[in-house]
Length: 245
Length: 219
Image 1 (cartoon, chains in turn red, blue):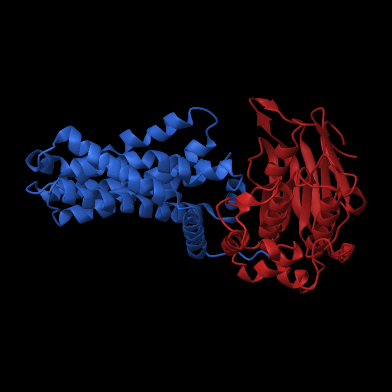
Image 2 (tube, each protein chain N blue to C red):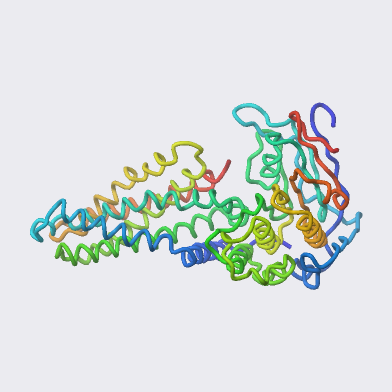
């Protein structure tokens, strides 16, 4: 953290599970609510950054949201992003996902980056099964649909329309669709807002499996306590700065 | 882990997604059919009501109905996705070319359905004949308007204010399709100049929207 920039060095490097596809990694994993998270495979020597932000900032209305950020995320890591409303957490996540162009600096991402806000991501008219299926088809990963649905414990909700789900169920459906696409980087914006404590514990289980498959997760939340023990790093966004905390 | 998907396969996947959403919600179908029926009946009352008065305005009535349908369609292309928080995930997954192609084909299907319904109704109610060149005009004109609608739709979704005005700008931009389509649907009018105009307009709009679409997606 020098010169006004948040220098967030590579968080604990965790490489992809060797030789396994995303759906392979999910098969046999515990479904939501069935037990603790599987620890990700760890091989620090093999880690390579999935996301690199170098001197990146973003201006809204001519004013930078925060000072330039240097950030590197390794595969299979979980990084929490915390901070008050309006501090720029969503801007950071959308920029990391490639949806926003940096005003300064550059962004490099090794693979597909996805951004999901809360329980969004899916069209409300569709059934859960249909929505997850057509989303995975966009990534050419139809085979990953069933493992993702099972991982999130959505079999019983497969025929329900997304618009009729509770907020917590929608988060699970959105997560199933996103992880079925096998992203290298998954940016989750406030997925915890609609979850009760059990839901948070279930989310920790799911994130453990996702990370074990090599996906780096950047997660913005106002409720970091439950996820903090399994997180590799935490970024605090506040007062125009992004800093490791 | 994230092998690139061919653009054509992704475009098909985007189209399949559009079809699946429509099949689930039937939004376009349940709004298009009553809209077209009401439009043609009201036009018949305004311009008629005798068949002798209505036959000459049948082509124009059809294309006004099609052009009018582009405004709500422009809002449905991406603004509805933004409202449901699904636009960002779609943008993250689909390449701009695939996203444009899939959305274009879906919009084309919706506008072609509107054209077919309106044409069928004017044949029935206005007792107007449909010359063969009307089919050419219908196919190309709805394709051009679909491209226009897709481009404007992304602009509308990106806009934070005056979305209604942005969507309404489709109307003047679609004027060449209205003019050429109407003339091609009117018996006894020279075909070649209007067919050329429609062809050039469709090619220009398709190329222009294709070229600027990646820029429209940027934030």
